[in-house]
Length: 191
Image (cartoon, rainbow, N blue to C red):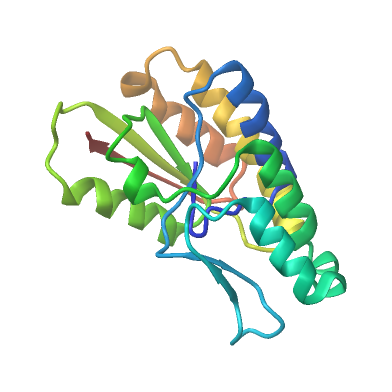
């Protein structure tokens, strides 16, 4: 799963990731941006951290700056949840060179584009397909909750698909017809 800043706002898809990591350690999450950017006291003053900065460190920094603000906007809860899943946010561009993936799920078109561009920009070493799928989810708490449930549903359907190369297009078409308010994008890239 990839997000711009490596921060997953929906408790549903983060829970799915946590449960699946316990059972299937090949499920990981990454950010595609140049740094981890979290909302600050104003839109022009974000909190910026390097990828690899532990969630516990980020959380302590934000709580030290303004606990009330970051509890009110949900960052404290999100970081608490994320640190139970893994130690720190990881950068897609670094990890994608070390691992091969069958499927990459994103929830924002610009992240989908960044993942595809990164895969296209490097030589294909083993010519193994990777399906990049975007389920568009608006970045607000309400949409994240609804979208997170859809994300879990989509991921489970993909996991149950016996042959991604033959069956994923049909699976995605059926999903899109069932949930037309959440557009899907799909691209096949190669490792």
